[in-house]
Image 1 (cartoon, chains in turn orange, purple):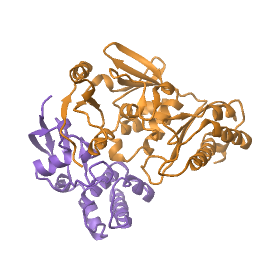
Image 2 (tube, chains in turn cyan, blue):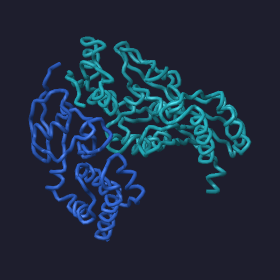
Image 3 (cartoon, helix red, strand yellow):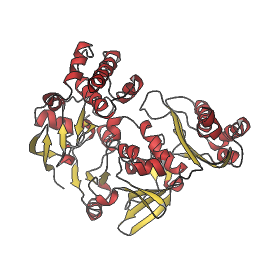
Length: 290
Length: 161
């Protein structure tokens, strides 16, 4: 369907954004890559009165290492994330996530800030930033604040952002030689949203895991940090017994809703399979054997 | 806020200035305002890929881009790509292998495939399929399309030796 009649404002600066919001209030909707928002307009799932195009706001751009973290500007497009050398070096999980996001033409437009702000429970990047222990930098006319990624996602398509705020950047702790990260998903067709997915960051010391952040997507109302399963792996050699313990712990970590793909028990099954596959990928002994 | 937005951009190498409604997407802009009907509007919500065009050198879904946002941009459509001869061999391979039936998906398919020729000259058959997975063809079953891309890649690699 064609888009409805709508207004358009091109913001060149943060001040332009604040002005547009002051004038139009809730009727104004920020537009970044538009790969979700513009599709929802076609379906009349959202009906903003004015689109505020923020893609030319330089303050929201750029990828750099600053103060011991990797700072990724919110307007960084998925394709840019996938080819950025700093991302590959310091946050390889994000680079690995990119090929799983939709299709090349969409990855050339969609942005990390847009994906996080929309907070689709089956999207890859929200799960990744929680797994990485990243912080979301939220800006408003009052200044900026940092929100831990795991506190940022508050429910279905909901975030901790206030109506005054815009995501400026994501700050990711730098990967270390001991950290392993992996993202896996099961989808019916390439590029579809996942039926279930897992973004995992595991700290390793030899064959032993020192920590494990396992974040599932497509199995809840947002990214789901499987704390019990992670605790079941921490401090242990990642052998079959450890994997079985973590899989068992998933029963309490996850409470997946049924959806068009299948019932909750199918999602639980997929989560167990993904957990086993993820550990096979990150385990150094397995890598050496492969 | 204005109902119409003035934009100046480059389309297939030509400078174009128009005043567009905010609700105008890039494909309607190309087809209705500029008469470039090679780009097709299919699902109009970003799923089918029939509207694939290049903006600033990279492929996008034309139905998920506001024309109003393209002031200063460089747009290339199948017409422009054909005129430059960049994909002449690919188009010949599509014809030779009958990689189209109704032809609705073909412009988007060729532009998406041209992206493989440019960025992934060593692409495997599986990688070709993956790259084209966002472009739907409801007639051919894809085999002939993948064949055409694969053979064009192979011929170009041989030519480069």
